[in-house]
Length: 102
Image (cartoon, rainbow, N blue to C red; front, side):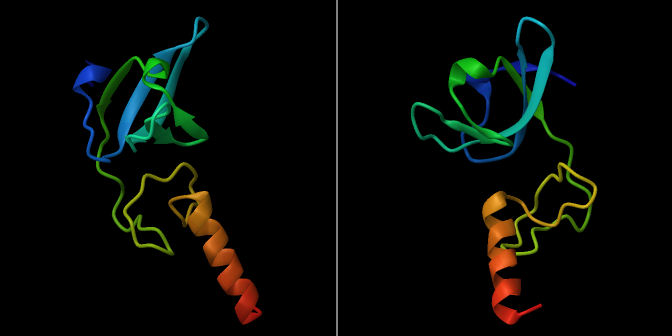
C-alpha cells in the first residue's frame, strides 16, 4: 500500500482508508469527505477533523454484492453479517419491518 498525506486525499466523497498514530499504536479508519467544518471526515464511529488523520490510501474494491439493503449504495462491510451501509439505513429497515409487523 502506498500511504499519502491527507492534503492529497480525495474530496469527492469516495471512501478511503485513513491512518493515525495515537502515541500507542496505529489506528485505521474507513472514512470519506463530507466537508462540514470542523469535522470534514466521516467514518465508522463518528466524524473527525483534518488533524485526526495523518495518512490515507485507496481502498480495494468491496466484495461483489455488498450493496446496502435500504439505499443500494456500495459499501465496505465492517462485519461479516452487515446488510446496511450506516446506522441510519439500519434503523430505516428496522422501522419498515416494524410497520409491516414482520
